[in-house]
Amino acid sequence: MIIPVRCFSCGRVIGDKWEEFDERTGNGEDAGEVLDDLGVEKYCCRSIFLTTEDQIETISQYKKV
Image (cartoon, rainbow, N blue to C red; front, side, top):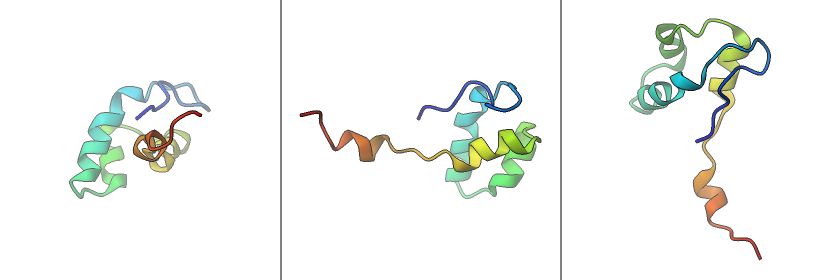
């Protein structure tokens, strides 16, 4: 999954937190609590985590003609 290295709005580095966020939410933890634990407090940064969706499997089914 490609997550931006920095937040588009405030410029804070967030790319290093994606793997832990994805793993913990995949195990059933609440996304809000995980973001709090990771120190992601700003709404702009949180929105990137909550709205990013892994689409690599869907896209890889199609090949360029």
